[in-house]
Image (cartoon, rainbow over all chains, first blue to last red; front, side):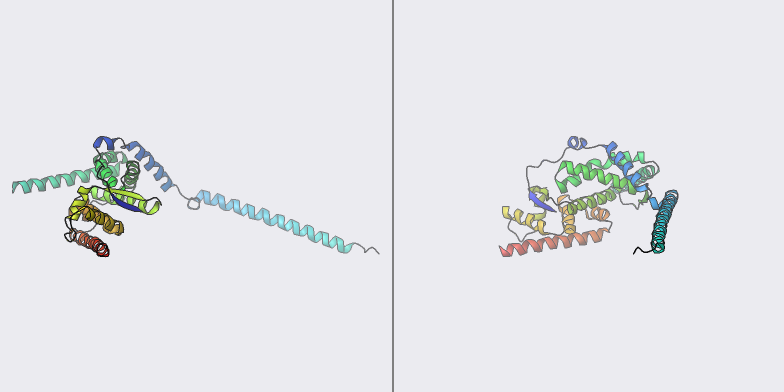
Amino acid sequence: MRRFEVDNEQEPLTDEQISKYKDYGKVVSSYERTLINIHKKPLYKNPLAFLALLVFLLILFLVLKSSEHAENSLDQNDRIERNDMPEDR
Amino acid sequence: MRTFTSHKHNQRFKYLTEKKLIQAAKRNSKEFARIYELYHNDLFRFVHKRVSDVDLTADLVSQTFIKAMINLSSYKHTGAPLKSWIYRIAINEVNMHFRSTKKMTVTKLSSEMLACLSDEIEELPSNESKMRQLVEGLNQLDEASTLLIEMRYFEQMRHRQIGEILGISEDAAKMKVIRAFKRLKSIILRTDEKI
């Protein structure tokens, strides 16, 4: 969004005024930071990191599956025990 | 004849040195400092004319040079000056700023700058109200046309230069400037009729 206005008091910028804002070091450091971000590979593009992530997820899946299985077998044993018990009259 | 030959020689020399400068900067990013040194002040003035704020100009100029450094490897020297390519990046940065900011950016124009434009519109009486109508017309004009008017009338750029910055031919740039001017003129005359 911009708007034009008439202003006759504005002086043209001098070289000295501009040179105050001249900072090549700042440009270079920003450039290097940007370059690092550009070249930083996302996790899924790095084969080692991707493999590690895959192994971790697999272990997590197996642990969850085995705990689920253990819970199920406990429930089943409970049910069998309850069925075997003589009814109180 | 001699002047023409020497002008041609100067152009060729400038082209060669610029080509060498670009090649050196492509090989070693430290060499980019020379490009920065060469174009910083002109670019600062170019951006400042659009945003009229020195701090914002400094940010946009830095951003422009960072983008130029990043994209220099893909730059192909076609004969057009490197300055035009850097100006094109600056224009994109400025336009991105205008689109992204919610705050109104004020571009300050002097009567001197407007005089070049007002001389071209003979239909309006030359007085104070003509300047106001011109500014009002510019505020209603689309972004692309405004840019062309700024480059041609406020910065006194040649059509060739405008073409180089926009990446189009000199004739195409001339046509675009004429169309932009006609658009501005019709807006101004329409508002003049209403008044």
